[in-house]
Length: 548
Image (tube, rainbow, N blue to C red; front, side):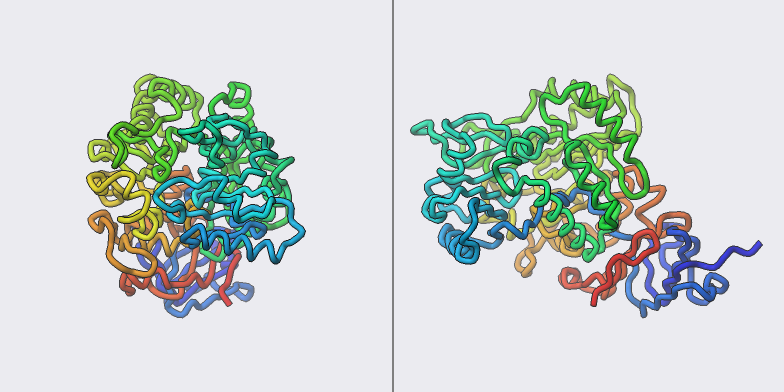
């Protein structure tokens, strides 16, 4: 019997499928949200009926929809925050705050985001005294660009009850002045504590940024941006149970247009009862549009403020190697426990000692629980010891990495990352090619809003290891080729998140998630890729974005 015609046909395209059975095609037919046929224009025949929507893409490149495997879709950027991205000095930060206060004289709190560590002189961390001079007595709450640390002024510290250096807070740890012991105004571990359930509840009644409506507005803004970037599946890597209603609301209101996978955060002290609730949430939310399930862990923090865990001391420091949040034995026992309960883990690991500790824990879990298809992920993998490269493939660990983070204008020579680890460790920086050649699965992502959300910017960086404005490549021996980087943004991300049966390639039977680009990446020099535009984004057979 003949099959009914397609709902949608895309034809006259240059279709790169990432399906080895049919690597290239010209046309795609879609019915009921799934791909039913793929092939050449002259073979399309009966796929087109009187009600079929036919879209001629005029030779443009068609790809599987991008999967952003680590995107903090709830966090930003926030329209109510002062944007400090690109501010290169305390003077420029002060000018932006002053201009914003002139436009918002009625505000109580000053909130800002995007602070780059390099804006602070002499390689030091910021202080309340720096901020007091700019804020006119208003309490001020400023995020570093990576959202791992917070900069407060004196009035904010007073309102938040910070009275001593080293004080542990619901949302971080108040750094102490080494000479006086007083709090400096710089609060570390915000990502670890402040984005936890307790941390958010501790801030919600005091700082406007943490309020429910502000959080929902940020989510909607980021969802709109994701559609425009060609992102058809988003992995939100760090949520509490309190955050799930935001996603439910977006879905109910028709605003959740990209698919979403939400990981649940397991801070230190998470109980077995809470793990039971995580399991219940994973059972409740598990369909094509919204899935809950992975568990987010931290083993270390970040390199720039010297809170990542390194095997050897930081450059220009004879002793300090950073710290892990758990002892190696504690972390091994924790990962084994979660693995035994069937959870997939996402572990934030940036320094070479943090990464090794996490790999050791996964190896321990395999030894005590038996090997299974767990697909545990290490996230960031910024500074990887050469001896540990092959362990990813051996242990079945996915490397979830963010290409834009390794750009010279963010992490390279003269910037805090490269200077902190020292030249001797630059060869360990974001080793994409080494991991790929060793057989590891790469799943690429943006880490929005730490860096730009656009996958095409990440693709450009992975291909070139250059800044957005060009210039000299940093560690170009770790670039990867275009097929490899496209796989990491599509089929690699699908595999990493147990969705390869439905997503990641343009294959009959899979969900119809795809993107149409303005130019053919395969005919562009790598340096031009960052300027290519997303023209169309489709999710489930429905166009959710079209560039005007």
